[in-house]
Length: 331
Picture 1: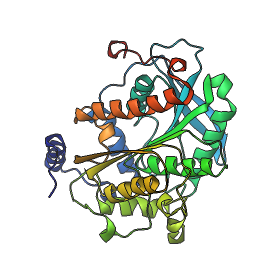
Picture 2: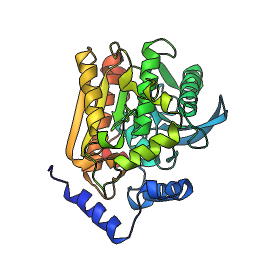
Picture 3: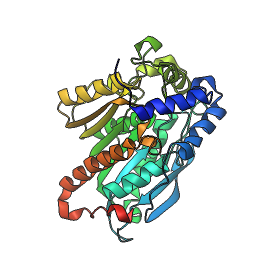
């Protein structure tokens, strides 16, 4: 059996001692509250940024709130590259707040604008509502690039877990010309194949942050119509071709039921000619990027993610055109 990082072991032990229940054993309302509480228990305070502002754009189901971050140490009117970020939470959990610290960290580390999307959640709004909202938000960002002070030619998409699923779908839409194509995709332990059964989730370790049973629970809420699960917009790994996608960073964890599919997606993109950076953390678990308080390694992981995206932005237009990242003291 693969070794587990001591910090992850400590999280599991603390949860067991507290009698914590897995998400699938809770009501949706209780699961959302428990997930939201981790912002305080599991995350360091957000780094200061020069701007954090919520705006509203029109979506197919009504207004969509976006949170716009600009990094510390850049002038107010600088035109910046931009990462459109989509939070995780199994399509039923998560919010702008749960991923606020992560977005601040990436804005500063990349020296870019980060725009986080507050898409509709299941089960109130099942598939494809989340996709429709993310597409509408992405198009609105491109359309308003001048006012947002971002470069529409330097847009990336990213997300963690279910957000990684939605980001991968956006990248495929961009490749096919349905939306302006992003130049990079950052996929943190993404869901890329939900057309699976419980026995297909390996590793499936009870007591971890999520298990195979958790994923089945999330999947059932997101796609109550089983036929939808084979659609590439729900399971990007089932796309006929992954050729022509933008460069990708894929992060996978060894103690995560999504490990196998994340690895498969990275390997298939590579085989089909996509430039892929694959960071595998064999002793870590799902959700590590939002555990900066309890897993100190998470800070270094976010730094790596930021450095990868910063390099893509720099090489897309030349190093001198990308604002310098602020020093750690400025963060």
